[in-house]
Image 1 (cartoon, protein in one colour):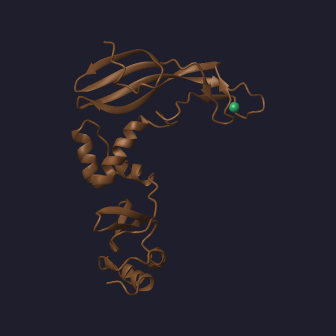
Image 2: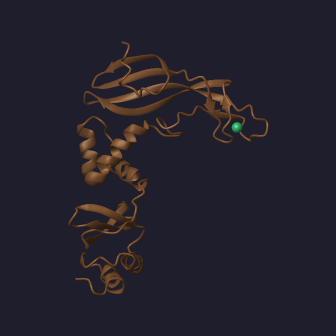
Image 3: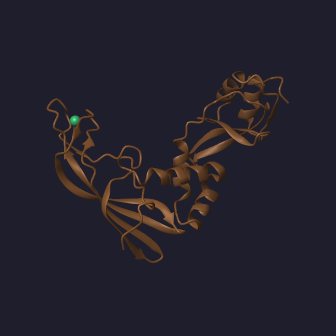
Length: 227
Ligand SMILES: [Zn+2]
């Protein structure tokens, strides 16, 4: 079955795209036909094909069904004599990152869901909509987000610990409790780290926290007048 072009990222140059029903999931097989690719080492474009291989990529669900794309891609010779790389794998600007096992748009979906719901609930929702991932995968996508520290508007925050990896690696999450949004992630749960953050945010007047003594100390040091 030939598939409509809107189902796979339209910017990709593909041929022989077919849709295979593997009830309950869908499989799309396609061949990349872009004429050239840029060497990741020196940036020089190459048309010189070394060979082929298949990449298996998770894509957005189609009609709620889990969808996988088997994409035949190429390796290219780098023709730049000064470049240390002789052979490199085909590159796809933004749609498919090197070494990833999903399309960038799929990772964007998981990241958005994870931002709203966190690891466990995010993974549960992804499963319902046809993109099953583990809770740790959801959290891993969140680690890539650059949350930019900025001035609060409300001055009322909540501070709690947050697991990069449950049971092993914890940081601190800071939430604006009036605007109901995450405003920063700190790399650890230390009093001094929180104190430093608070010193950079003098508008904070009210802090909600759990009983962790490190947070109590951090707040006393960083925002001594806060409630
Ligand atoms: Zn090169």
